[in-house]
Image 1 (cartoon, rainbow, N blue to C red):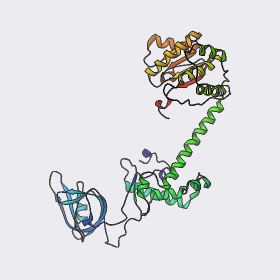
Image 2: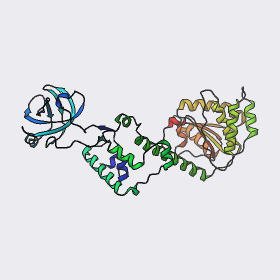
Image 3: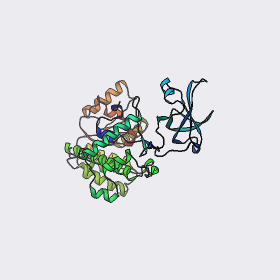
Image 4: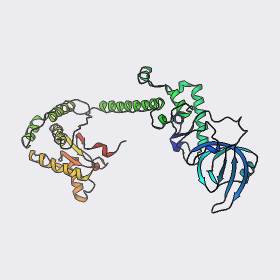
Length: 385
């Protein structure tokens, strides 16, 4: 059951954080209850009856010095009725609602009480994401065990945030943050917790953000370690391409192209995001970058998230590149039969030096002769892995 929640280790349990909290730290007089509010109440049972209506239910009447409340159970056993017989004191928690007999709580959590000497909860009660067959009570008990183990052996969960960084942002340590989030004291600001603004929540968010950035850094280093062919600038090809354009490049385009040329000349893969407004000329920049790959006897591919967008790019590249003697291939899901086979063959044997398409480009049956540059348009629309 825990595995369904992604909990396989004690540390997973500690980072399985509450969705919200309930205030069970104080008793509310029955006379002060309001419909729609959760509260802990305590009173003497004055009646315990099985009511036969549209749905058979067990109705328990509670009374304290300020008012009367009904506890209603639609699923119950004879033992429950015997347990909550007239004269015993019951402490219950739940949401009050208006009913036929006044205020009622449906299926409250309850226990027999020894009266005012029975202590209320010391902390706010956490409500966790759970799964079928795993009750909140069990999940809370397991989490308390995990917190005790952490207290006994703090070295098992090291704090990876340096002290200087924590102090800079005025954040608590990892163990203190976990303790507070699983056991918030009554003086904590629940509004801050609910909106992720409490220092303990921000402390864990900082660790998550740092871990994400470090993992991206590791991926980038692994990619760069793979190596890549050093691609020439392709000045001659680019000059011929620019001569046929009915406009001149902007200063920003020229600056970006210079940066791209430096990256392509390095013996490591380029990872670069080109950002700009609609109509700012990003596609032309992509085309000129592709010419560097072609000048280095490699292929270039441009992938778009939709067939409509990919087809627009295909028409643009075809109009730009075919006058230069560069064959442009098109590959998308809707391309079928002989046309698809011909496109894949041209990609595989290198006749198609520029390839434009959708996610069909990275399917298992598509093979490039020598792919030197991959360009992804609107990468965010492909999803995040």
